[in-house]
Amino acid sequence: MDLTDYEKEMLNGKFGDGAAEALRFQVALGDAFNAERMVEISRTHLALMHLDSDRWYIAKLLEGGARCRVPSTINPIYDLDYLESVGIHDPAGEAQVLQELNESFKKLGIILTYSCTPELEANVPRFGETVAFSESSTTPYVNAVCGARTNRESAKSALAAAVTGRVPLYGYLLDENRRGDILVEVDAAIRDDLDYHLIGYATAKKIGSGIPVFTGIPLNTTPEQLLMLGAELATGAPVAMYHIPGLTPETPDLKTAFGGKSPKQKVKIVDDDLQKTQLALSREEDKICFVMLGCPHYSISQVGEVANLLDGKQIHEGIEFWVLTSSLTKELAGRMGYLEIINKAGGHVIAGTCPDISCWHSHYRGKTGVTDSVKATYYTHLGGMGFILKRRHECVEIAIKGGF
Amino acid sequence: MALENKEIIEFKCHKIWGESAKGDVLISKEAICFYMVDTDTGTISEKGHVLEGQRITDKMLILPSGKGSSVVNDEGLFMLKQNKTGPKGIIVKNPDTILVAGAIIMDLPIFDRVEKKFYEFVADDDYLVVDADREVIQLFK
Image 1 (cartoon, rainbow over the protein chains, first blue to last red):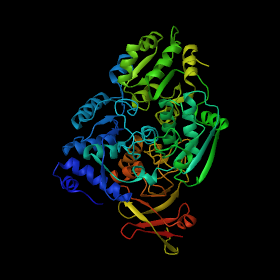
Image 2: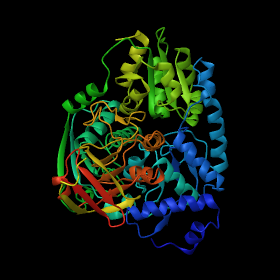
Image 3: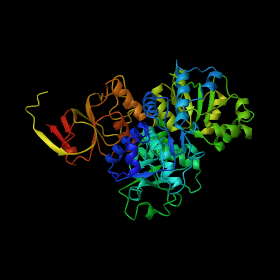
Image 4: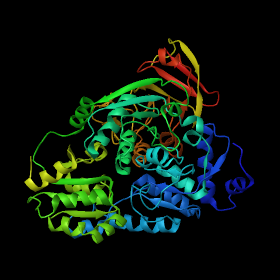
């Protein structure tokens, strides 16, 4: 790879061993994908967590004096203080791990957002910007909706990018790799947010990989719904980019979406695909003991919808009700009066927390909950949590009724 | 294994990362997320996956691609490495950043751009050797 003088100095350790280590890894990555050079970036989002592999890599870079060269935000882990306050305890020793991680993140210069939706608030890329976003749900949104450019970064490749301020130039950063290759005709009734989860996952399962170009998605689809569509495309397949002609900034029409070529594959998504996806991912109806909403993190509108549904109602005894969101949105929800309504009904709004964490695993192991997120259902079954997949309003109704 | 009676067929490939690697072939027709693996036993645990219940330990794993969350794939690879239950190497059709970055950091040999006809010949339990310097796969049939 052709490196600039500055990059050569970095590689030789002039800016510390941490930066050198990060760049070495990026050069190997660039070589793997035949990148000719590095390109500077303006921001990153880091999907680092308290996992052993993350802590190992963070410690390695910090020991070498690494610091973020560009603004970088961070994914959720969990709000232990809140969980402790309602009697959910951390598995032994994790409180200290979280504390140490928080300090490490600060030392690296990471902005402590603890949110998985940076592209909606706090770290929003603009059209044409080159960035490095990990968190698989953010990547398709950044490419398809913001019109910025990112590869499907891993937590560690994004951290390396934050530290060096650049990425190898390959993949979705290049015009020729951003064109669509599969036409996805959506011919299904779209009623609410859940349908976007289902369309995303069903499409991923049908295409396996590639860049889908959607028709049949309304142009007034909300940012949250586009985010869910991308989140589930990335859960079911390595999809980092999609096109919706007329909505994707670089894609005025169908012809542009395919770069003037014909699609190599055409698939249809119909009502039956959505129903089958919902059933396949959902545990059978059973006695439930919790409801978990907000994977990806709920926006203020979504929290507001839950508050409206719960207004004046009471969550049934024996059901723990959770809305997961960012601390910024929680603050706003307080100002809007949503927090008070949800709390009064017996529910919790928790900030900076992911559904797939050991705290929940140990608390809900072997138990069944209800959620409106395919992604939450997919990842948490390993932690021993079972989910029934329902629409948001159904989740709230089930919580009030105490079952089905 | 009695390899001396076998025919060796060579195929060109491209080294993404790592040293030479060898082992028995395990083919996955579906993408794999390495978090959806029981890392104590090296067994695929993803519900409904084509390889559900099969062990990837010490295999030369042939994949269409990686998939899934950027958070957890590395964790799976890291735990497989720690527990010594991971594959010997990966041969991937469509490499993506998350899979490749994980393999580089965990120092797991990974190869791509294999000649098309390789995929017509190769079958589960074949023995294969990837020579990383020559960028050649030797398949024992």
